[in-house]
Length: 191
Image (cartoon, rainbow, N blue to C red; front, side):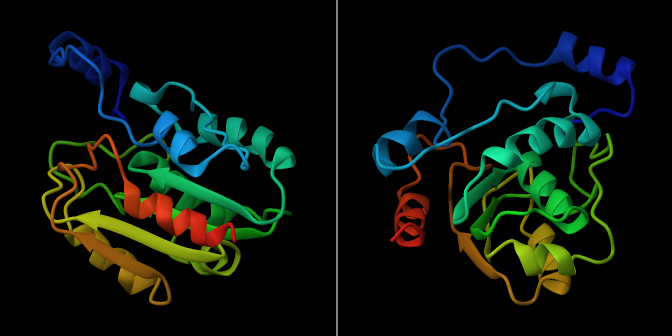
C-alpha cells in the first residue's frame, strides 16, 4: 500500500480492519511446494509493504539482481506487479529473463479507495519492459475490487505484445490459497 503522507498512513493503521486467522497466500510456500525442490525460489520481503516507496523497493531489488541466473522467472503481484513493470521499464538488467508474470498490477492511481503514490508511476515508454521481460503475461480477475479490469486496458494500449489472462473469479484481488494455473505456466517456462 502507498499513502500520500504519514498522517494518511497513521489513519489507516488506526482504522484498518483486523483479520484473524491465516492469510490466503499463494505467493510464498504454496509456489515453493508446488514447483518442487529443483528450483531456487526467492521471495524478497520488500521494505515497508504497508507504507511502500518505490525508491526503497528499488534499492532492495537491485541487491537481488546479482544473485539471479539467466532464465529467471519473475512474478509480481499487485503493487509488486507495477513495481516490476516500472523497474524493468527504467533499468537494464544483465540477466536473461525467461518470463515475467504481473498479477493484478495497477497501472495508475485511478483505483478506487487506493492512493498509488510513493514513486510508483509508470513512464510513457514501456518498450524496455517489453524488450527485457522475456515473455510477459498480465493476469486480472473480473471480481477484483482492488485493481479493476479497466486497468488491464491501459496496459494493453502500452504493451500490445504481452499476453493477457482474465479470470472470472480469483477471490477478488487474487486472495486464494492456491494458484495452479500459474504453477503450470511456470513449470512450462522451466522446461
